[in-house]
Length: 209
Ligand code: 5GP
Image (cartoon, rainbow, N blue to C red; front, side, top):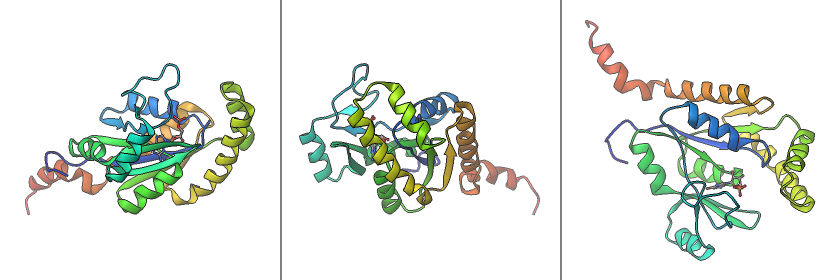
């Protein structure tokens, strides 16, 4: 990483499918200047309305696998048969430019980030208010067949077991409150002494010794 600017903070947000994390993260990046969401690579086919280079970088499975072999990913995972990954260089560039970066990745990916960059990322798990609420949200979206919903619910049950591995947990029972809590976590991280160094050193220098 270069010394162009103080390196930004790195956040990981994980949540079971149907928890509303996309909406939560959209709000966060709208409200917090300097927070950027990392754009993942995926081999999953594009859904209607999704834009290549905006929602994801959509690539073929072959290309994704070549990137894995070339060691380009900070983390990657096979989720429901599709591959998803975060390109290391993309994140390094954003952080080196002083941006705070949020990775919205699953629990497998979060484990790899923890292993490869120990202590670097602040990890936040977003929980739905209950299993029943999650099930009804997934059914309410009405976009998946029952079989896919059952699979997502089984995955969610396994994923919530990983909550213990995270630094912070926020319940998405009410969108504004949930977003507010995550904003407070981000604000606290930004106020850490090490990050404030460039700001506080000149202040400290004004005091007579
Ligand atoms: P979807 O296909 O619905 O957009 O995303 C499915 C899951 O993939 C979500 O849980 C999302 O957080 C996860 N995901 C998206 N991008 C990445 C990534 O780069 N790495 C990992 N590990 N998971 C990702």
